[in-house]
Image (cartoon, rainbow, N blue to C red):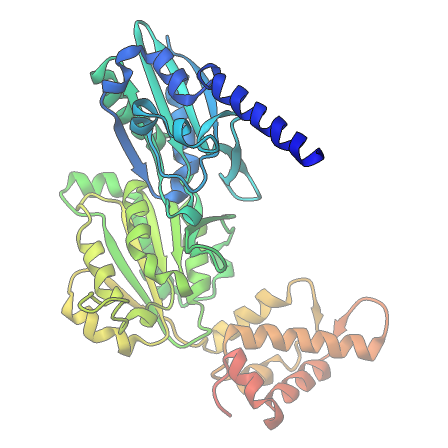
Length: 462
């Protein structure tokens, strides 16, 4: 009898639900009430962006909604996951009419998207409908963030209006506002991809480094060569353009590991304040097209591709596809002459790049070789890395002579080991590195047992 009672109660609820279905608030009902009975016949205008642009789309949409004489109401959408739909479907039949668990009005859900370094973020609507009133016109805007787990990688905005011209204009204005409010502009960014997930392209923010010229120990002519091509062109761009000269340029930094290629990039990044810097490394090298697209849109920009030799012979995932290096060179060639975009490529293996670069002349304007530090540079590096450490330099000339062919990393480790030997010797109190500590640390690093350590630190084979 208890089971019979449950069945009766369930049947009553079903009958009551069916009887009240027409009274239930639906997205279709809200849209048609806002747009009028002819809403189902209105054209829908759509704009789409890559998923990582969600934060910029929200910024642009918020700016557009704040326009004069524009009032709006946000209707949250729940049950949207794993369901492809748009304003056309909501206005015509309404998915909720067939699926009570499909998209329906509810509280708007938001997700925090990165908007700057140091954890700065902006809440973005995951899926919602904005009902907009602008004079006599009625407009509806559906915004959907990316859902890679559902096969929907893009951020989309759909617009429908009782004034067809207003719908097209609104979509254009939202895109323009998204570009004007772009939070990537002037930032230091790196491209990457989810390690675990759906392969979604990610953009990460980084603090802009602060690096003075005296912290970059390079030969004076080498530093001047790099700075002229990257920094000085940006500084004098108005004069160059007025004289009919192009701004786009490419610089190749090459040399053995540990000679300061990455450090040089950090210095250039610190000098180009206000310039958007995009970095591509490792498993993000396949995102060349996306990075170039962002660089073009946010010029002035610097696109850094480290270890570019890794893509010199990569034929891509599909037969017939151009090598990624050729794709990069074609992207460089496709820039407008007045685009203030500089490409900085780094490599340890210039020999792998030479045939490809020769086949695409004119993309890289300057190749700069970075060499292992000479005696004078090693002395400067020693002074740079000792910082406030007290060191007896009476035997420094001998130390510098014995470190021929080492990198900056080797010298940095030499000082750390010497400081550790001093700490073990004294036990307590302020550190004071003796000449014997410095010589002992060097003997230890040059010992045959540390051959692999020397290799890892960039020392020439003993």
